[in-house]
Amino acid sequence: LEEIVITSYQVQPVVCRRRMTRLDELGKKVGRTVTLECQVAQIKQTSGPTIFTLVDESGTENAAGFIEAGKRAFPEVNQGDMVRATGDVMMRGGQVQVELARLEVLHGAEAKEVLDRIEKAIDDRAEPADIPLLIDSPVLEKLHPEMRKIAKIIRRAVFTAQPILLRHHADADGICSAVAIEQAVVALINDSGGDFDTANYLFKRAPSKAPFYEIEDIVRDLDYATRDNVRFGQKMPLILLTDNGSTEEDLSAMRMARVYGIPVIVFDHHHPDEVVDQYLDAHVNPYKVGGDYGITAGMLGTEIARLIFPGVDQHVRHIAAIAGVADRSEAPERQQYLDLVADRYTEEECKKIALALDYIQFYLRFNDGKELIKDILDLNKDHDRFRNMVDLLVEEAEFAIAEQMRTCITHVIESTLPNGAHLFKIDVEIHAHKFTFPPPGKTCGEVHDRLCQQYSGKPVVTLGFGPDFVVLRSRGVFMNIPQMVRELREEIPGAGVNGGGHLVVGSIKFVEGMREEVITRLSDKIGKFSTNVN
Image (cartoon, rainbow, N blue to C red; front, side, top):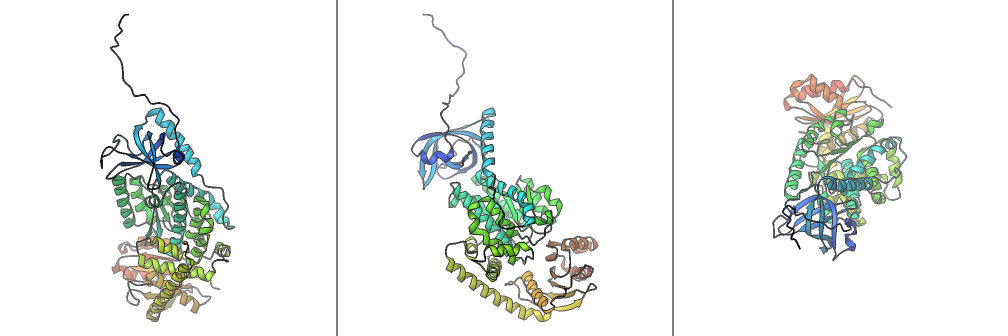
């Protein structure tokens, strides 16, 4: 026979096209070898193996690659790659894990086919359930499509192992809005096969002292996000702002987030500035559909939480009622939410919970106080501890408020404005206790409440000021604080005026040397607004 010599040839690896296993099927295949087609969501190098977080159309699981202790396995694989993984299914620490024998990066049409399949499936899974609102509200009905959009973005982040960073105003309404979302997201993570550690790295809640996203906040958040991205291979987070995020004061932080490609979504009830919308992926605000601040952030958060994970409905619905009384909503929705939970919590009990939240958050400062807050909101199983804790905190808070009022009420200065409103001023820097509860804003609010009772039926404005700030509270005067801030900034260029809040409740900051002129001009502007005298 004539010998044939092949001189030109190529050696190529051949992959057996065996049936692909979905990640949600791994629990049934322990001890067997499987092949997966997934996207790499995270790569974490440990002192032992390299841990790859894999995502497909059905869920998220971890796979471990090992060459030698502390050395990166499959270094050619990067976060975001489409891969074909082969390995043995094992149980580690009570969780399913694939011990990788092979991890191949897919390219071209093959990678696109896997990506398209995963994207479509995740998009379908992320679509919120079609459930009705808890109450009858024309404003909330108009907001419902955008609330569904926010819920879908959050659900998608969970299904793709994208961390979620929730920033909220550090008052009772802000806490309520954020904790409702927290309960839903953690429940969704657990329902999707995650555990305590997964929930901790995929979701973080952080209070913000100001009612807007400050530079101090975004810098801290970017620092942590970039470190986690480099050290643990985490994706950059989705940022969710609640009870803040709608105003011009948020712009600087949002611009920083955009530099890093971080998506930002907002639900808020402060008067919005349209300029922020260009930096947001979704924006829910009652003012956008003819409503006002009476639809509080906590109400919005409760409804969005139900869309994220309907199973938390009975667990969180009372949070909307607490938020309504906390922010003194006068909208009809407040009473509907109270009626919804009247068999469990009276209006007076909701007020106590709100006060307890304000008190505990003052001492928590920048900490989220996760388990403490859950106890106060009656979200843990120990109902007796909830009652005892709320009663104790309310007793302490009321004593502190009474002491503060006894100290400062005699220093209130009264005058009458041209529009007939009674203007009351108090220097909370020198006539109130500092660095203790209640803080200046709460002190001003308590003084205002007492003056409103004293001057029942008459328009009342209270200004609590310090060296470089003034806190405003109003009843019966149709003010527009954001508008006044813009005008003062232009009229007194050397005062460095900024601030905001709601239309009739808010705070303004300025340089100390211009205090008298700013307060004088501010008083003049308040005196020109129309009033409502009962």
